[in-house]
Image 1 (spheres, rainbow, N blue to C red):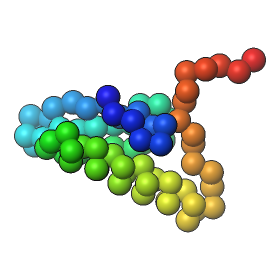
Image 2 (tube, rainbow, N blue to C red):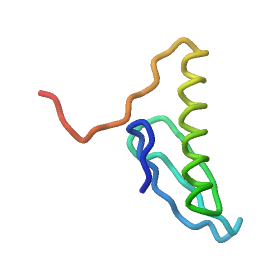
Image 3 (cartoon, rainbow, N blue to C red):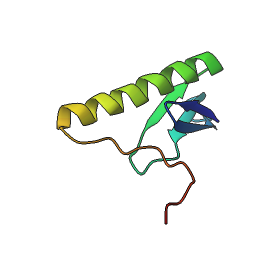
Length: 73
């Protein structure tokens, strides 16, 4: 797992494209990224999260915050 701005990405190997595929798991919105090395995966996750945040800003909506695992009552 890797983390950026509170968003957590998990990585799987995709044999069809001979690369790694990452997905942010602690939000309902879909954020994905690809890379062939740890450094590239980290950079691509940062780009994907930043692009998601920018897209939300351009659309005039609040981005979904990452789930923290803590429940409020």
